[in-house]
Image (cartoon, rainbow, N blue to C red; front, side):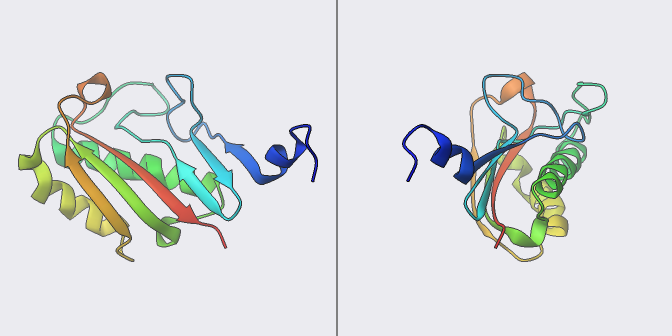
Length: 135
């Protein structure tokens, strides 16, 4: 096995697409490691404008799911390959409305955690990260 960093390069690949929001910090949009894709959390940013869109949970969740879908596509996957999601809500009172949007996209019902947090980046209402199996 190479010991000069080449093994890491062979096993991990950064995923980047202009069809999803650019990373706004020191992280990647996503990483493929072996047979798995790990997506950074997505918030309701329009990738074309860099602006937050949607004023309610339904509109924001729709854009989040579309952004997640673009990252999955860039990694060679889709929603059916997702094995785990982590969902962050600014208000657990939005849980039912968020679930309605979520259920349209994650029809295979992957494992999931959903928590309310004090504040999300840019004061959005939701954020979703996923892990997908590429095999």
